[in-house]
Length: 464
Image 1: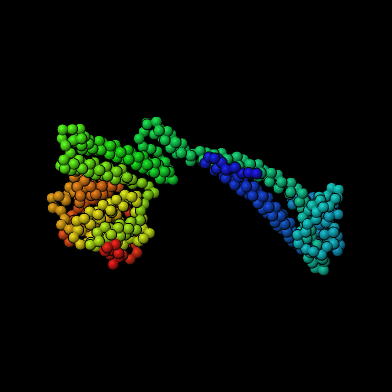
Image 2: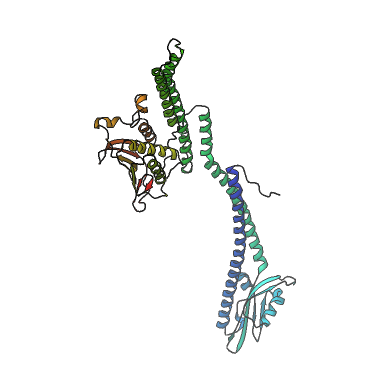
């Protein structure tokens, strides 16, 4: 049997948790109030009785033990509102007399201090009293003074005060419910606004979510807008890919079809080579557009381990180019993450390293760096490099055949396109050893100093 069913809404969950907690705390406060009230009342009455006993003692000592000269009786009751008993060897005074059955046993007792008598069943006398007894000597006479108060009247006053406290507690609980409901409603207003924005987005009235949400909802809104940007980018890439394929494949297909439909022309070796060249053009174009369609772009929550991916690529390229050496220098740790989608980082590193491996003479050097300015990837080779006037145009999208040319072509264009999608830059320059140096800079924050500098050298797929 299920005793508690989890609410299906945030408002219901908060009310189900906060309201019982508020009621329990209010009940505990009411119980503690009752206990403290009893204790404080008891101490207050005891202090008053003790003070009045001290007053009587002072009067008796001033009169040298002569009880007849004391102003007692109705005067004492009207001023102090307490019953009293004074006993000496010559006389005993008790006021009011109806309390005598309660006070006489206390006069005969030898115990001083606060005394309580409860459960008495005497006409015109209370059933529960608190008395303070003190014995002392004045000259040769032994005097006993007792002052007492009816606890029944005190308890009735306490019960009335406690009842009013309970009423106030109930009102506070109702006020707490109203405050909780108002607070939850105001706190959930951004969710209602977000829901309305999503509905407007679904209806096509807005392109992005622009809601003034609290700090806790900012990551959600950013993630949703990032998702929309990613979907738009993928849709745009798909359309561009279809347009490029339609434009680039149309001419080779028309040429092949013309050759095949011309029945008067035999398929000579030259014609076969032309057909194969056209089909190669189609294949390269398909490969280029397929690689571009896999770009993810920046996504919140997506990250990669640059050190691990770089080592895997260096190992693979060491196998692909066994006569060349690949080096890596970095201060990153194994656990360090970069806010770049794993496949995108793999494309950038792979294209730059593969291009350097093709054109290098003996070795390629990779550098991974992170500081307050951002994330930096540098790839340098000892190959022939590129003319200074051609450096600014490397990796730019121009003619389709330029992007498919082996070397500084398709791979560099893909690396530049991915870098720009992350708000970064790809620059080319002449390296310190005369070859081409490619530098990728991604915006980002520094994760601080990492562990000691690590330098890994790979040749033929093995570290050295």
